[in-house]
Image (tube, rainbow over all chains, first blue to last red; front, side, top):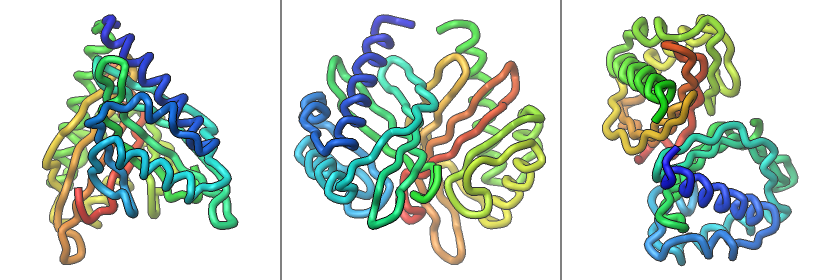
Length: 132
Length: 132
């Protein structure tokens, strides 16, 4: 593994840890601090469906997630991590209370890394929100 | 990149080519020939939602896809390929006619490679089937 690949993996793992922290607690500052100003992200559904541009938009998105899942979401299993020099893909499962039921999903997220920051994020759903 | 990583990438690219061929034409033999007998796959929704085990089940799945999208699906853009020694993730966009409308999606698929075969496949949806 090249030095760049190692750095990319390390930065993405930190971002993933911060993502988990945000999902669980609603505290997003640690993740937001890692985003470049020109950060962009893709999300599959709803109000943030499609391409979203800018760090401010990311802040709105993460706050929206924590409003929707106000009791927090827990990453129950990190199944696969696949990476190259610029991108790291995490395949994981999460769950948490949602509207009186238990939300569960399988998720793939790709982080694009630039230096010690995250410049891109793409989220994909592997299940229907009811099982994982 | 190690020799194993190079082989994994090569095998997965061939599988992805065969997947594209299957989606476009409904001919799945080339992809099926690459699957191990104990092949398993995950799919996000519908009849094949969740974990599916065995090559025969895969055959049924791919035939089902081609029945549902009888005019074929075209991969319009391969955006990211991320890989390690055993797994390759393809992020791409596809589209095709479906029930009188144009189906469009963003997809992530992970192929697990063993030797010159594919032993696992996980599919994730990045959009709602209406845009990509």
